Length: 202
Length: 202
View: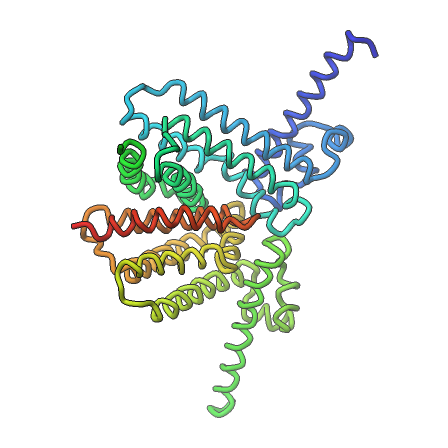
């Protein structure tokens, strides 16, 4: 292999991986954990079983890479939306919470939840997922602090940001089977006021 | 059949049902949704396949009955524990939150979460579960209001109680793969103070 052919092949490999990861997320959302078999995922991605096994030798390897991929996509989407927010601090808390609430009730959260729940009783997957989950959790916390412009050195601010993310995690579960948006909007309206007070108060 | 034999038979039926429902919850906790097949559940319960099908003709029927059963058991456990609480209002919020946090990180929550996540992509189960989930949600809200001695006619109190339950739902998810109790306790210490203010303030 020459330098000329290596670069396109690396690109093709990367494109194949991206297709497999996207297909994994889609299949988790559409069919759930038990329906998202490696066969179904390879078909959806339009990738041969051989190529799939070359890139991700086990279902756990594929699913882990997909969780990492979707976490990065989610963070990138949130950052891109955040770049379009207005500067008014009062509005900002409201807009950030709305963005995060959309993320925690959207397909990427649902796909992640399918994996977390399955990993609870799949020891290999669980062992591999725990460090990834911790990292993703820290990054989401950091992102939220940045977006809110919160000062974590002030007492109670860190706990308020954590509670916000855990609340959103719970609202995502409450939205799994039916549209919970009406109740959620009312609840979050109160939450936004509380959070504004908690992170702004001197 | 005479009146003399009918009563014992009804008791036996009820005992068989209880064993099947308990076994369903245990298998969901131990093996997850995909591992908790009707065969595995019948074995665990020590009940024949014929008897199982007589009481619960489908897996969905069995799982639904088990979710109802575990919700009742959870409410009963919480009520029993609540009866032992001291009367001091400040301590009460703290004790109630600790009790609820234990419930939302315990096996009954895990079993319910397995079913909710699976029902998202199982349309028959989902259709049957939605009204049950709504009822269980209302009952848990009512129970929490009672335990806290909260007055929901006052502005913001209803939202604070709802946020408490959604927060606990999220903390249950955060505890799925690893022991999150240290972070949870710190977060809930701050939450107890906030909630006390929200439900006591005039």
